[in-house]
Length: 216
Image (cartoon, rainbow, N blue to C red; front, side, top):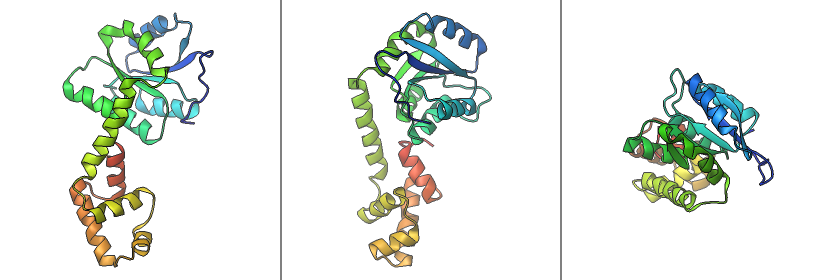
């Protein structure tokens, strides 16, 4: 259950914290649950537990630590995975890593805000902003995602792009050949060139990479 349509202005905002430090979990639970309009409904110590909780319950806002010790996925990889699964929860990164690349990767992965742990007192307002109507930042991030997609597809020829779009829609190479009236050898060459230009090994990887705005 990735979608959460239960939030209204009269119901508490449901928050999931993904954090590998139990002391931080305890401190943030105490701090955030003083607020009346939202609740820290659950905490996960690794990416696998977080994916399970989101599937089972759904949350309005996810607070993700970037460096999750012992997890299969980092916080950024987790955000990208959640977006790929069409999770509609709003993602806020909560971390001590402020390097430019990490910040950019976080927003590329689907985060709508980025809070340094030393500024944790900003979290209540950040959570409220995340659940408010679309902000200018969200509009900009959506446009950024569109530009990242175009940037990745730009090297493809019109024919290769047409093939990519059909692969993205779930067509097999055989079905694409019939739909576009292409010879098997022609289609095979176009797919090979497409994969080379996108820097991936197969069609599944190509769709995944573009969907993740270039993040692996």
